[in-house]
Image (tube, rainbow, N blue to C red; front, side):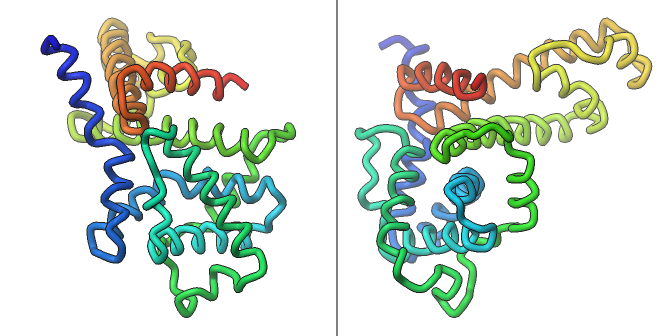
Length: 244
């Protein structure tokens, strides 16, 4: 194995699956921190799925809270197996099984004397859901789309943090439009005037920003799979989901 291949393989050692393994540890501080990490990444796609199935905003929030609580209390994640497919697919199936078992039980909000496992912003969640496409995407397809968009949001957030640490934040906010649609909106000359720089400098900045965006996107995709081959499949699937 050459050094390039070795480096690519190393990138896949700290994936969502490694977080799952840590979350299997029960009620330890490390397990809880791992589970909270997964919650932050997946709670809104699961919330959107539940809303599309017909649950009210309150019930959908309770169901997500209850599901994550059971993941910790009953070690649901012990059944997760990276050899059986994508983690998001396992998670959605686990949620469906949870709903079947919990249908006739007390709502998740009553579990643990009303204490929340994760602090979810229900208002923000419902505001986001109100902006979902009006066309009738199935609940499963909406979950996949929200997963894809959440992944892109994480990439953009990382890039924003990097740019804030190395230069004026306003510059990134002005230039990010060149990342989101893959095209060109505001003319370079106009942006240069806003930022007090040259048109050539703006072109260079956009080029570098796009390069770094692609690198971070590859890293985020790598976090969800276990091999470079799966990453390529996932990249194609991501583009297909976003083009629907």
